[in-house]
Amino acid sequence: MKMITGGVTAAKGYQAAGLRAGIKAGKDNKDMAMIYSEVPAACAGTFTKNVVKAAPVFWDRDVVYEQGMAQAVVINSGVANACTGEEGLANCAREAELTAELLGVKSEQVLVASTGVIGPQLPMPVIESGIRSLVPELKADPQSADDAANAILTTDTHKKEIAVECTVAGKTVTIGGMCKGAGMIHPNMGTMLAFVTSDAAIDQSLLQTWTGQLIEDTFNMISVDGDTSTNDTCLVLCNGLAGNTPITGMEDGQAFREALEYVLAYLAKQIAADGEGCTRLFEVTCQDALTKEDARVISKSVVCSSLTKAAVFGKDANWGRILCAMGYSGVDFDPQKVDIILESEHGSLTLVKDGIAADYSEEYATKILSGNPVKAQLYIHAGTESATAWGCDLTYEYVSINADYRS
Image (cartoon, rainbow, N blue to C red; front, top):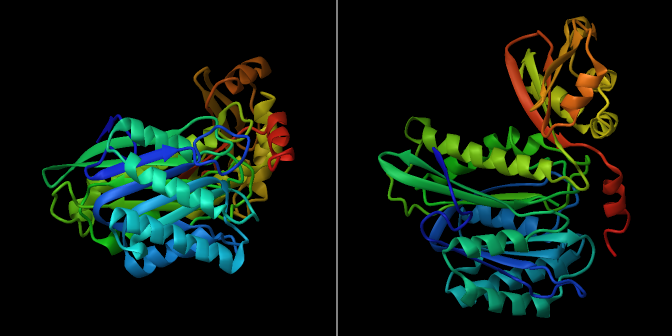
C-alpha cells in the first residue's frame, strides 16, 4: 500500500464537485458537494445509534440495506435535516430524484447526507439550485475532490481527505476518502460524515461486513465531546473499475481490507485532531488486556474523561485522573498491576509503575505534554489484547464555539 495525492476522485470512475449554494445567509463558505460514480457501485454504510436519527440516515439505510448499490451522493452543510418529520424525509426523496434526473441514474441509488443545525427544514429552493449547479461542475480531478472536501465542513478548521493504492490480484486498486467532524463527536456508528470511494470489485455483503468491523476500531474509537450526533454516517462505494477479480474473502482481499482500515483510521484521527477548540491530539492505548473489548472500553473511557482532557490541555501530568477513568470504565482489572507511560515527540516517561507513582520529573512531564500528539500507554497486565482510542484536549475555545453555534 502507498499514499497518493487526491481524495474521493483518486479512484477510477469517480467525479466530484463542491460549491456555495447559499444555505445559510451571511456566509461565504462552500456548502454543497456531490460525488458521482460513472457506473453503479457496491455500497456499504454504518450509521448513528442515536435514537434520534436525521432524515438522511433513514434514507441512506434503505439504499444500503435494500439496494446495496449507489451511484451518487449529494451532501449539504449548514442544516442537518434532523427532527424534521415527514417533510424532512420528503426532502431527501426530492434531492435524490432531482440528482437522478440530472445524472441519468436511479433515484434509489442516490445517497444523501446533511450536517449542521438540528431542527430547521432544508431550504429546498436553495438545495435544488445547488444540485443543478453541482452536476455540470463534476470532474475527476484533485481540485474537484478538494472542493467537495471543503464543502462538507462545519466547525472544522481544515479539510480532511486521503487516497491510497494497493494491489489486488495483480491489479492496482485505489481507495480515496473525505470526512468532516469537529464537534458532537462520539461516534456510536454504526455531526460526523465520512465518504470513501474505491475502484475495487468486491462482493457487496462482504464490503458491508468489513466496513462494520473496521468501524469498531477506527471511527468508533474517537471522541471529542461525548455527544453522538443524529447524523453520523460512513459510506463506502466500490465501483469495480480497477478490473480486479471480485474480492470474496480474506484470501483474495486482505490487501484491500488493510488499505480500507488505514483510510478509515486516518480519517478518524483527523477528526479527533481537529476537535473544536483543541490544541493537540490525545491518543490512548490500553495494552495487555484480557479481551479486545476490555481494551476498547478502558482506552475510550480515558480519552473521554473531561478531567483528563483538561489536564492534557494544561500540560498537567495528573495521572490520577487517568487511573480513575480506567477504574470507572466497568472493566475488572488489578490497579496494583497498572503502568502508565506518556509519550510525544519530546520523549517517553513512566508516570505510574505497579499502580503507584513513579519517580519522574514534573518538568519533563510538562514538556512531553506540550507535544502533538500526546500518547498514553496503559498496561494492565491481564492478557494479550490491545486497542487505541483517539480524542483531544478540552479547551476554553470549545465552550466559546458551542455557546453560540446557532448564531
